[in-house]
Image (tube, rainbow, N blue to C red; front, side, top):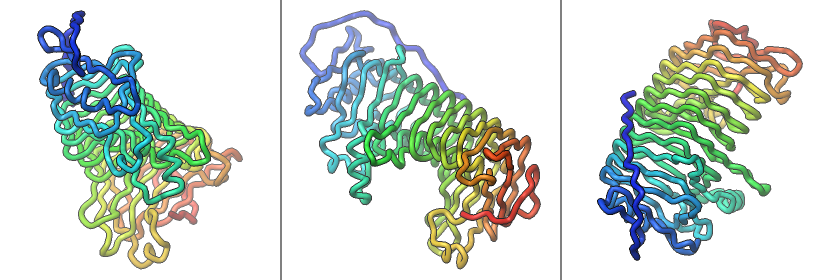
Length: 400
């Protein structure tokens, strides 16, 4: 992976100054000062610290302090910087119209950096409840995403808690490479009748050599999702509560070539979700793209009360007639499902999997060590266009 780590200076020096930043004597450590007022934007204070200490220095969000993020924070001054979050960074929720379709924290063009909490107390709070409630009444509202990696390289993001993102938590994209995401707890839980929907945990797209490990996610959408352009993605030791699973796609929703390749997922626990793992593609036709999924392995996955253990959808979010007129031509090659165990929910009992392959595509899927059952102890695997199943016995009737 060639992920580069570097040590930070430990300096115990305090200086008195009347600025938004406390720098050390040699400017290697900066501690921004919170306004301690949620109506005042602390983004400028943090950005000031980044400009002063971001080139090889250390920026510390102090413990027991809350910094209100009322405008997007761009981390591009961080070059080989050490960004420590010991307190809380909290998105404002009284200016929803301002935040529409924005990204709260942008790790744009950041290189050779580490974002972490030494104490484990660091929290990034998306403050999402009002956003979910508003979206529940106004579905056209485009909620902000919490964190994007944009053309970032050699970055480690670790040992931080993330809470209540209005929409996606973490999205790694735009040619980002050599990214390590580890030892995180992500939790989006609604306290109202409106669910915390579309709160994807960790998404990859147009990036390579990404390592995701030791993660716990509670949300209401994909737990970890591989979007178009994902290449050499490694996921290990992830526990997901209430999510929609480990997802490849969706792919093919627009013109062009859509690819996901060289993905390896291992040691996953999937609890109380619609499916544990899935591949989702759009149908063919002039308005959609060409899909290639190659060399994807998901292994050692435990299913606990998920509706399906595994699913392939070739008509994702599309009218049935369109899928009949322009069936999917997706190429799914060298897909391996290994050592899936556990018990599904009773929603589709006796069915435990639903494999609806692209009618005009390629279906190279292998099961090994498949040991999933329904509550009634049945193991029915629904299939369509899966002509030579390996490792499972197919029953006609798949859909999706």
